Amino acid sequence: METDPLNSSLREILDAVSDGVYVTTDDREIVFWSQGAERLTGYGAADVLGKHCFDNILIHTDLLGRNLCVDGCPLWACIKTGERQHVDEVFLKRKDGSRLAVYVKAARLQVDGRVYAVEVFGDLQSVAGSVLTQKISELSDASTIDQLTGLFNRRYIDSILDAQFDMFKRVHQRFGIVMLDVDKFKYINDTFGHLAGDEALRLVASSLRSTMRGMDYLARFGGDEFIIVCQMAETSGMESLGQRAIGLVHNSVLSSQDGKSIYLSISAGAAVAERQDATAQDVLKRADEALYRAKNRGGNEFVLD
Image 1 (tube, one colour):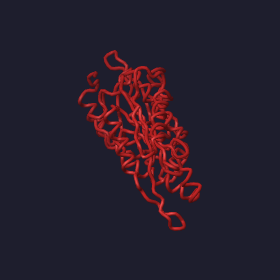
Image 2 (tube, rainbow, N blue to C red):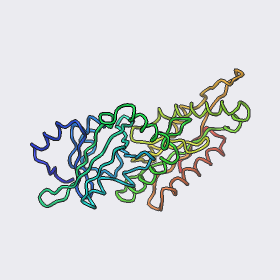
Image 3 (cartoon, one colour):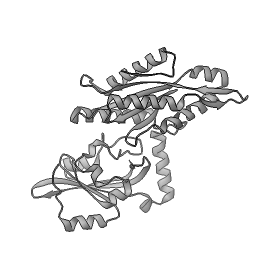
Image 4 (cartoon, rainbow, N blue to C red):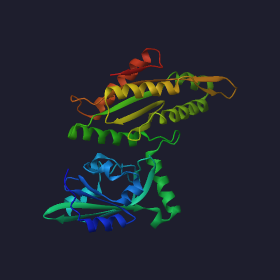
């Protein structure tokens, strides 16, 4: 980890600014994190110093749901071109999992012959107003959020998978995938109707949220399938997560319109990134195959690849 290029007086000035400020080296290692950045994001300096902005800590996304840490990073554009960057509508993920609409400005500077980049970000509501910020947030939600369950959607989680695999290949930080789906979902739809099926998906989504660590990502993958992408994963942790998810859903009960009870369960399969994996899809395929084996055992099962 590189030493902080800022002198104490400049640090005090930047810490007094209400906006968030952070400084990186030319390879995007974070070497300064202001008190404003901590206030806005919930991440303290100890959480981020020595890491890189492409580690996707804040999960910057634009209105279309594009993950800017992977594709379109304004700070990286600034480092490469030397031109100042300004993006008016960016969303970041706070440490508590909530999202914040911000504006972002980036500039390149030199200290003792070394190139650095500084990014300043601030609460968009303070300059755009609450009504406009809400409308912008709704546009972003439409591209990243599954409307039925309120979870991330397939498009967004695909970008997260690509980012995690890129980090795995560069710094060998392993990640894991848990694939889950609702047991006998077709039976629920056919017997009790699609409204009951929708309610089952919402209940499962709500249950799965309570299994999550702050650093992990939960999405509806499609139909009755869900996915959890786990950062910094090991097999023992994946086993605990999968079993906990199944236990939370097991025997959850819905009431049909005619008063009958609908008992829910899920099956899950998991895999952890391995050296032989060429793409994120290889990890995903192994997790999906593990899920298939769990379903073949009769459901309400967890299988780790």
